[in-house]
Length: 98
Image (tube, rainbow, N blue to C red; front, side, top):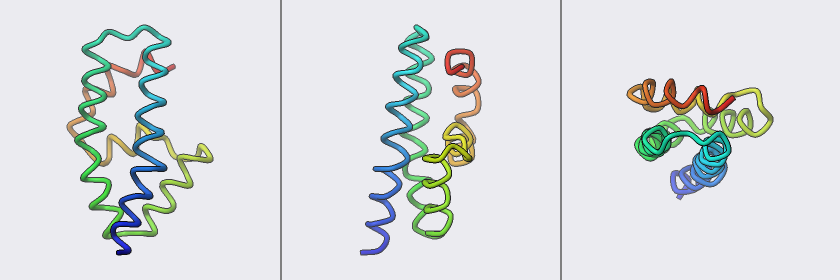
């Protein structure tokens, strides 16, 4: 029950807003489709890793969600930490993210 709540918390307050923000920023900057697709795939791949970590460390989950919402934690950094293979995709997207 508690793990389901933590998973919901991560998806609702971290992954969904982060994905929407990334897509809108890259669309506004007219990023190439390949860059957008790479970041989208990384965000999807990071989801299970973030949920697993949040389930095992609820304090990390809460502090990460709050930190991203108030701006002290970069969503890009959370994504890179959750899925280290996302480094190249995030590096390609960086010029379009401002």
